[in-house]
Length: 125
Image 1 (cartoon, rainbow, N blue to C red):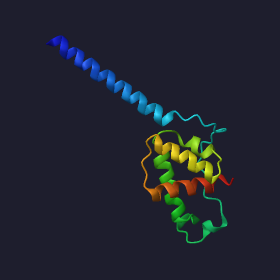
Image 2: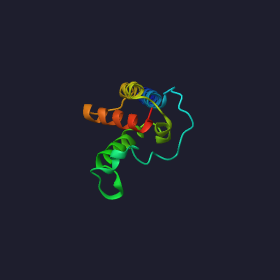
Image 3: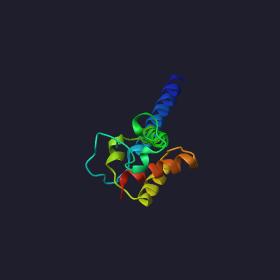
């Protein structure tokens, strides 16, 4: 009976190790080529409209909310340096965020649109 119990524990541990490895690979197994990473996030969306409807600091609250959403969701699997360094068109961001959803990103349709729109506005591409 002891032998069976040890075997069962070893099998459970092995399954957990494999599951964690698959999860880690899904989050970081992105083979995109991002050019030199920047350690600083963009200051704002970079448009003259950022001064309208603002609160303290001159940044639109919607832009702040979008920035925070990107920071929270994207940093779950990789560093934000990778996000800030990527300069993509809106269509390229759609492809990237769709891939992240397939890899486990959980967002509502509204969050998805906010993330894609914000990242595209930062890229200026």
